[in-house]
Structures are given as structure tokens and as C-alpha cells.
Image (cartoon, each protein chain N blue to C red):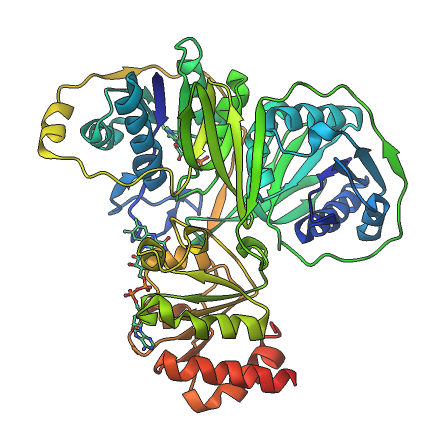
Length: 246
Length: 317
Ligand SMILES: Cc1cc2nc3c(=O)[nH]c(=O)nc-3n(C[C@H](O)[C@H](O)[C@H](O)COP(=O)(O)OP(=O)(O)OC[C@H]3O[C@@H](n4cnc5c(N)ncnc54)[C@H](O)[C@@H]3O)c2cc1C
Ligand SMILES: Nc1ncnc2c1ncn2[C@@H]1O[C@H](COP(=O)(O)O)[C@@H](O)[C@H]1O
């Protein structure tokens, strides 16, 4: 099986969120980045498990700048065979998906994984876009994926339950919690990752669909109203009359 | 035209859909056009969508549309969008919308936005508001293009009845072959699914043991609430994974979120801090959750929770 995993970087979960240039740019000063957890924990690890079971290769692809190389090496240390970086700063999901689709178009991947969303922009867009560009089936928020006698059986999360479907490969899916368990790279993985191939390729020219984005910080919460354990009737009254939520 | 994709559950239009039709109608008016509701599959009373402002319903009663196959739906929606010269297509930010939004954006080659909480029309231009960075920032931008597409949060605004039943047009167009075969749909709970719940009672490691969950169930029962939990609780198998909220679980935005024995780690807050009102019950005055709370009780949860349940029952009686 030929597997492709799309990996992106995202600020550490505890990173401060601030913006510069009149609220048009995320201020990365002092921010450390990590691999997007959905990409690393679920998409990449499930791809590795499939390879370990039925053979094949796992390629990771990232649209990003040289700063992303550390993170790409981490994916190689976890077990990916090779990596591709499209040398471009991502502009919007359409731009990113176009780059990945352009790379994957003539490579005959059986399965393309993305994470369910990046935890910074929370768009949840890239996977569906790649699928449309390559005219492939797409399943979002996949929490189980098994091969049964040549048929791929996929479970996706839906409101209050799951939907189980059969899909013919090739396909694109976005990975959600449950698909696999996080793997910590071991010493050998870290050593070999340094010599695994990482090719840097040129971007294709596409204009982003989204421009002039402005960010603001949400209004500060007013101070918490504290109550004593014997004031539960009062809490109920406040929720009813002041907050009007029950 | 503004086109809204509708969704149903148990033979009724979802609240998310009624909200989407309401918002679609408001945007359509501001743009000087109308809102059309697209109903795929069987439907009981499609004309009722007119009460929420739809000028017309397009009903495609085909068996092959009972499940959401992203390729099939994308083809059908873009076909309808073309026929009706749609300027804006709205899907709900639900499991259905997630399957479709990326594909539709590529089809339309125009602006797109996911998880939209507000659409503003000014000087004929549409701009959107959505939250980013797990609720730590608000994002605004203008949607440009001939046809743009958004997924609207299920509770972006209240569903409003402003009209009367509208005409229903049956549409019978060729539907492409399925790319996915649905084997089965398993519903895992009787309560309102978490992403749609107005009230959520959530508990964390402070509960000490899964056998203590009874007090949480009782409180949820008294409020008609759905139940959620923190990640360690799901990871240790105390509660099912689909109840885990936070950065790596579900992101929810109920009107009321009651957090019990949860410390309020940033990754947990990421999934819940868009809730309208937050109540925190925790015995540690330093628990970070209090900073994100509207109301707080600093005490032993085993004492407070039954008292709160009791107070609610009294208030209802
Ligand atoms: C990358 C990453 C992603 C993560 N994603 C998530 C996520 O999506 N969701 C999530 O929830 N976590 C997530 N976490 C974990 C998160 O950091 C916290 O560890 C977790 O939320 C803590 O869960 P908790 O509050 O239930 O437990 P604890 O932190 O152990 O807190 C228990 C709380 O209960 C209180 N308590 C104890 N006994 C009582 C009592 N008798 N009465 C009243 N209060 C009591 C304590 O004071 C304490 O505040 C993630 C972590 C990482 C690194
Ligand atoms: N710059 C990028 N490079 C490679 N993959 C990406 C990039 N951005 C997003 N993705 C993939 O697309 C998924 C969804 O991202 P998003 O649509 O931005 O929420 C991520 O989990 C990644 O798998």
C-alpha cells in the first residue's frame, strides 16, 4: 500500500495567542510549534500500522518553510519512510490542498490521510479539498479504519454515534481520536530519521481564496461570581433570572 | 440566491437546520434576494421551512440521498446552486457539513469559511465571523467570489419563525453513482447528542471513581442536560470516548456548561470556552477553571452536586 500523510505544524497548546500588523498576522514571537496532534497521533500512526500489516510505504507531506523541517524529521523518527516539503508558507486551506493534490496526482497513493483539523485555524477543510481536486471519495473524522478482504471499512463520528461504511481505495480520510494510539519516537527512530529522504519541491502557482483576514481577541470574561455550597437555590435563581440559561 | 442544505434526524429538521434557514433568510434579505432550502431524501413537512423564512423548498426525494456521500452530495448541491444562481451556499457545521464544505469550496472556487458564528452584509459584501485558535481568537474576513460556501454553527443564532409554509418544488435530476456504501449507523446514546445540547454537565478526575457517576447523571437528569467528561476520564475508560471534550475531543458551545471536578487545563478549555455560561464546581480555589467561569462554587463536589440537583428539582416543582 502507498500511503500519504499530510502533516502540519501548530502552536504548542499553551502558546500565547496574540496578533501583529493590525491584527492581520499571528504573532509567532516566542511561540514554539509542534506537530498537529491529529496528524501525528492518529493519521500517521494508523498509516504506519497499515504498512506494518500489509507492507508498503508511508510518505509524509508538509506545505511549509524550512522551520518545519524539525517537525518533519519527527514524523520520520516516528516511522515514516520519506518526506516531502512543498516550499511555501501556507496561505489558506485552498492553497495548501492545491499543493498536496498537485504532488499526489500522479503518484497512485492508495490512502491519503489528513488530521481532522489543525488546532490553530480549526478549519477542517484541507482533506475534503484534496479529495475533490483528485476526484476521490472522502470520509471525515474517521475513528476506525480496517481492511477486510480488500474492502476498506471506515467508521466516522457523527452526532451521537458513528456511521460505518465501505469504501473502495483510493480515498482520502481525515483522522479523529480513536484511529490509533500516540507513538513516542525511540532512539533508533531518531537516529535513522536523520538520513531518511526529505525532498523539497517547488510550489504550484495558485491564488488563495481567502484574503485580508483580521483577528481580534475575545472580550475578557467578567470576574467569576462565587457562591457557597448552601447557596444552591441562589445559583439556580441566577442561572434562571440573570444568565437566563435554564 | 442563498441555498441552505437541510438535515433531519428522526424525521424532523434538526435545530441546526432551522438556524441555518433563519440566518440564510436574513442574509438573503440583506442581499436583496431569497433563501431556498434544499431537502435531500424523505421529508415529512418540507413546506414548514417557509416558517423560518425560506421562499421555496427544493425537495429531492431520492433513496440514494438518504446517506451523505460527499461526492454525490457535492454534485447535487453544485447542480442546484448553478440552476438557482446561488451567491451563498450554507451547510451546518455538523458531521454532514464537514464531509461537504471542502469539496464545495473547490467546486465553487470562491470564498469559504467553516464554523461560522455570524454573517454580516455591508455594501453588498458578505463577511464572516468565526472563532480560531480554539476559541482564543476571533477571525473576520470578507467572502469573495461568484458563489461562496460556509458551514454555520448549529447554535449561531436562535431559529425564528417569521413566515408561513412555502411552495415545495420536486426536483428530479440525475444523481451520480455512490462512492461510499454505508453499512450501518449506530446511535450510542439516548440523550441529545453533545454538539447539539443546550446544557452540558461535565465531570473530571475529581469524581475519583466511575461508580460515583450517579450524582452526575442525576444532575444532568434534573437539567435535561447531556453529559461530557475530561480526557483522562475517557482515557481511563470511566466514560465513553465520544463524551470527551477539549482540544483533542469534541468542541462544544452550549448555553450552559457545568464543570465538576475538572481543573480547567488549557486543552480542556479549548473545547468549551465558547459556552455562553460556565459554572465551575471544584474544591481547589487555585483551579484555573475559575478564571474562565461565570459562576463558581469552591467546595467538595460530593456535597455540592446533590444540593444543586435538589435545588433544581425544588425549582421545577
Ligand atoms: C496535547 C494535549 C491535548 C489534550 N487534550 C485534552 C482534551 O481534549 N480534553 C481534556 O479534558 N484534556 C486534554 N488534555 C489533558 C489536560 O492537559 C488535563 O490533563 C486534563 O484536562 C485534566 O483532567 P481533569 O481536569 O479531569 O483532571 P485533573 O487535572 O486531575 O483535575 C481534577 C480536578 O478535580 C478537583 N477535585 C478533586 N476532588 C474534588 C472534590 N472532591 N470536589 C471538588 N473538586 C475536586 C481538583 O481540585 C482538580 O482541579 C490534553 C493534554 C495535551 C498535552
Ligand atoms: N501546511 C500543511 N501542510 C500539510 N498538511 C496540512 C497543512 N495544513 C493542514 N494540513 C492537513 O490538513 C488537515 C486539516 O487542516 P485544516 O483544514 O487547516 O483544519 C491537517 O490536520 C493536516 O493533515
